[in-house]
Amino acid sequence: MGTKCGDRAIVLGGSMAGLFAARVLSDAYTHVTVVDRDTLTGATEPRKGVPQGRQVHGLLASGHHVIEELFPGITDDMVRAGAHLGDLAGNLRWYVNGVRLRRTRTGVQALTSSRPFLERHVRERVQALPNVEFLERRDILRLCTTPGHDTVTGAVVARQDDGGAEETLTADLVVDTTGRGSRTPAWLAEFGYGQVEEERQKIGLGYTTCHYRMRSDPYRGDTAINIMASPALPRGAIAAKVDGDRTVVTAYGILGDHPPADHEGFLGFIKSVAAPDIYDALQDAEPLHTPVAYRFPVSLRRRYERLPRFPRGLLVMGDAVCSLNPSYAQGMTVAALETRTLRRHLRSGRAPQPLAFQRDIARDAVDRVWNLMTGSDRAYPGVEGERHLMDRAGHSYVTLVQRAGTRDPHVAAAFLRVIALLEPEESLLRPTILLRVLKHSLGTAPAYLRALIPGTAERGARTP
Ligand SMILES: Cc1cc2nc3c(=O)[nH]c(=O)nc-3n(C[C@H](O)[C@H](O)[C@H](O)COP(=O)(O)OP(=O)(O)OC[C@H]3O[C@@H](n4cnc5c(N)ncnc54)[C@H](O)[C@@H]3O)c2cc1C
Image 1 (cartoon, rainbow, N blue to C red):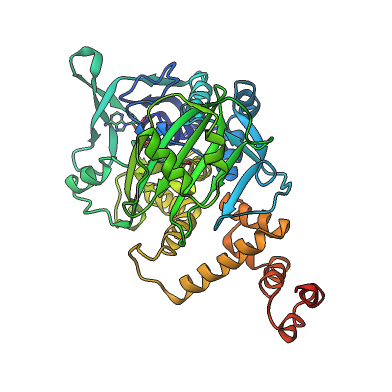
Image 2 (cartoon, rainbow, N blue to C red; image 1 turned 30 degrees about the vertical axis):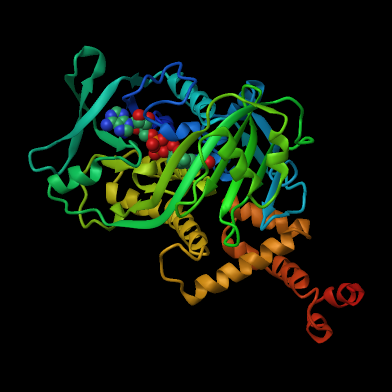
């Protein structure tokens, strides 16, 4: 990028969203500073500032594509270092309503690793950039602004290693990526910008995770098994091969039905999900630690784009904007997609316009995912929220798609491409998919109905 947007940008929070942002900002600002309360350099284990890092973290294919775009060659580096790469429907084993989706080659790669491993690889790439510096073990205390609070001019941080001594960092641009606990809503209210509108979707999700060493390979070449929760049985489990020759196993349940965090209870919960594969695999496995629980009561979206005014020099990204039900594995991908929008806004060589940026990430990265997630959550009877006619129609159609996907590899692949955020939901209504879904749904329907759909009459005639 030729023209610089400014001299210094500060990124508050050096987790996934902060690292992605720093990568893109390094092209547009002379200096970029990433501030975090944790020790980031050399961190290989889950960090205090990212407690969810102990739980399984799936990387959706669309997020993986952006990461590879930002850091060319990182996939190969990670695989060499112990991550696993498989085909989305060829090596990931998916169960919906207890029935396995058809195995097929999609050509879409799925990378599995632990969250700290992924973060470390991304962080090392960012740390290698000559104009990016990391300020670690700093607690971010507050923003600095011009006297009328029109412009954010930096942040005040406290040095943990220096008895909490305060340090003022000045910048042309401050990007808040401090996650769900971000204090930007409180700071904006204090500065006179009003309350940021929030949307919430209660889900009462409980996760429990344990890492295992497998004594045999129960996967037969697969890299992961995902037994998805469904409205009929709202419990799920995921097992994935990750770095360090380990397998991560996570079980989850909603609305207070949480997997226990003792070995026996954890295994008992896994035994109760809709398919036996993971439970069977664990019979011959060595647990590497006591299971770790995480509670996620509610998904949260902050509508910064709806504020009438916003200070210059401040952007908000990642979980600080939208913290999603993790069972759909969308959070890191949304952060990555927002980075594409940031790159577009910086391309002009001028400082980004905050409200325009917040509007664009809402439209380009958050809207669809939030709607997909809240819509899917509302398929569960106990989850609060109004069900519109379109919701009900959507849930019924998705059930038909899933059922067809257990028989038809084309439908399975189309469904998984939507889940991976590579295609919009509307792609499931394309005639080629719609006809296949109808064909499988009408397999047992009366002959006169089957005759309306090409290819169903013959198959149906053979059905006993
Ligand atoms: C249980 C669980 C499972 C998940 N599973 C998945 C998954 O499978 N796939 C997926 O894509 N996403 C998943 N997510 C979401 C994912 O973890 C986040 O979307 C992702 O980490 C991006 O978040 P972020 O960088 O915006 O914030 P965070 O990861 O929360 O990081 C915030 C950073 O800011 C720092 N910080 C915060 N406050 C301060 C302060 N005052 N001073 C200094 N530093 C501060 C923290 O130390 C931290 O480094 C999951 C989330 C949860 C809760």
